[in-house]
Length: 234
Length: 234
DNA sequence: TCTGTTGTTTGCGCTAGGGCAAATTCCATT
DNA sequence: AATGGAATTTGCCCTAGCGCAAACAACAGA
Image (cartoon, rainbow over all chains, first blue to last red; front, side, top):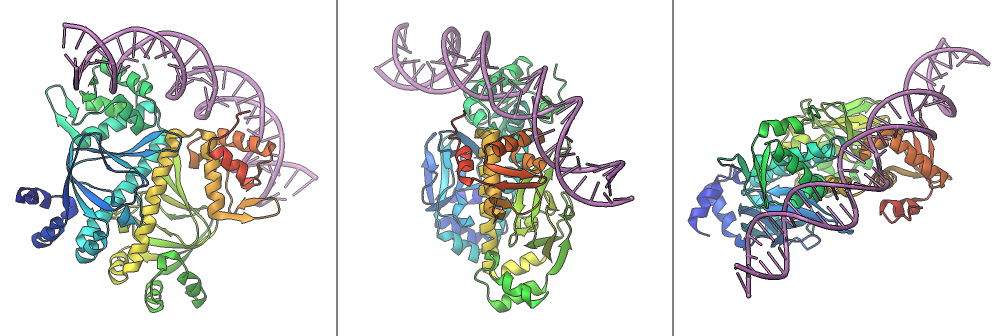
């Protein structure tokens, strides 16, 4: 762990309200791991031996069903925790965590969770706050899936992605990691084909610009109109 | 608070590992509230002034969307906490909690959460465990909504309901509170009509027995077959 | 430069299930 | 018993979007 890392890490919301010395104690016990694109940080059903903090890269959390479907639960951006199953009383990971780009993560043995949360109350408070908002997100997803049509869901998904990992370019806002049409489909509960058709249609209208594993949102505002469901339906 | 209540309450999983004296301190600070059927325990967007423990009855947690859709997030059975938004760092309730039957709940002012979780570590640990499994449930819902068809989802919903609130009768397993076809629809992301059609079809096959606001599952095993998606599709 | 592989696009047909509308049944009240 | 309102059932039509299949890029490695 280079000290360079520490200064960056100190600013993360998970560590808000934690004294520098304590932070050192926490970080000192982490292993730093490099995970190549498409490699897994952890696997569904596996014993939850560690919890992680994503320092760099992007991770896709995917649930696999017995019948072979894959559903993307969420994307993780740098600064977020992942694999905190153990903090919630689980002993196995509930999903696969796959590097959407080359990643650097910090890993702590699960049993340290108890120690940390006892010694550093802000740490557990911050974590549970994050869990709370994930629960909210999940419930919103359920609501979306129940009430919106595919077009709106895909629009919402793109908006979330650019909010989380958008990068300004001359063309528009680029999603800052490789993402396929298939990935979009797995986020929104549709098929590769429908996702592709939608993206193509939007590209024709100048709303987005696509590419192989690449999506650039040109007009976020018009995308929002679609997401909100107020479309003229030409 | 009658002492009668205390002995029942002591057995609840939320209070596991808490000394009797501590339990008294906790319960002593609760108000006991009676909520009539169709009345609300709390309302979406309202300030989260309290958190609750359901002692008797059944509560439906429903999210209302701006465009008038209602999505049932979960049903709460006696012994479960609800309205714990504040424990997760939220200041407003994220949904409506509606009594599906006449209820008795204990209510604590939200600010007591911090006190309790500091003084009684088991209490917060138990709570977060519950939050963890709700997060799991929510993710499962997302997966179901993404990969299963309506028939399977409705079957799953009924199975969950009888597991949570099933009551054996001569006819079969009765869902122990009034539940309409509309309610089933809002749980599964479909319409009243489709839900009704499914229930009728199942009734013809002797799988369930319906009634006004009443569902009795006659053959849980066959329902499970449908839920798992291994149907011959006659 | 060529070639195989992986991601993307698109056409076409089909069906699950939503929307609408009208009966029908059940229950609570009078 | 009669009345009115709410829950339920059902028929019919219609479309969003899935499945299949086939073409088409774009990139990686030889």
